[in-house]
Image (cartoon, rainbow, N blue to C red):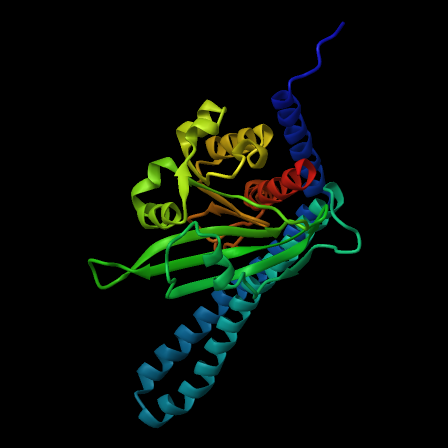
Amino acid sequence: MAEKPAPQGRDEASKIKRLEQFRIYYNHTIHPELLRMERRRIRLLRLMFFSTIFMTGVLLFEFYLNILALTLILAIPLGVYISFLLYRIQEFRMTFKPHVVSLILDFIDDGMNFDPAHPLKYDPKRKIEKSQFQKSKIFATKAPYYAGEDFISGRVGEMDFEMSELHVRELSPVENRLDEVFKGVFMHATFPEDARGRVIIWPRRLRQFHTKAIKDFTWEKGQNQDKEINNEKFRELFLTYATEDTHVEGILSEPMQEAIVQYCATTGKEMYMSFIDREIYAAVSEDKDILEPYLFRSNLSFELVREFFEDINLLLRIAEDFDQTH
């Protein structure tokens, strides 16, 4: 009798298959859109090139004539034209990301356990509220600097969720500057039924930066529960704290632990999670602005799109796993 593949093997095979499907979708749907945006980028560069030559000529002509009145008169249309160029550049940046994100979300929407009555929604200018970020208890900060964009919302299974990119900073205790608290993608999901228990995981190697958050959770009767984690690699990567009445294994399932370990090993990114009764929070660090287009080099890159897809997909898989196992 043939042996059934191990859950870990099935999960890895499913992940590879999903990525292959995304590669096909990229070739047929996203790449043509990137080509269209690439032609637009090249036209913009040409406009900038010829505008630079023209304005340089005008400035040299003004310098040659050395007439103050003429210089002042020409300064007005030149200023207006420079403003027009800056507007065109900003317009390119502002339209590139929403177009690509919308296509990625169409792919994700078709492939997961989403409620058809609640399709994924995208708002490029909105962000998760600061109060929701602080309720996660992952980061102990008043967040005087709190910025974000690319808000995505929907429902996976029976769980409503929202996520966005966030950039959070706080005042340094020793210097007159702002220290980085978190930069990346942050998700919040709500379990539809009453649930009790609180679990928070922090990257072990960054423990020194989260001392206050750990102390705050300990004050709320949280305890170190690393012994409840069976996945050895997960124990090496993360600190796991939970309240005494919480069944950690029931919340952090084995497939979820393995998916997080594999993701962190592959990307080198940091991940945080908390489960506060019915509320689920997850955060993935990202040093650079995701899917921000280049102006002076090509944006025809599968890796550029894949990274954003995998960040979103991992967070939604966490919500889906929790929905299916609870």
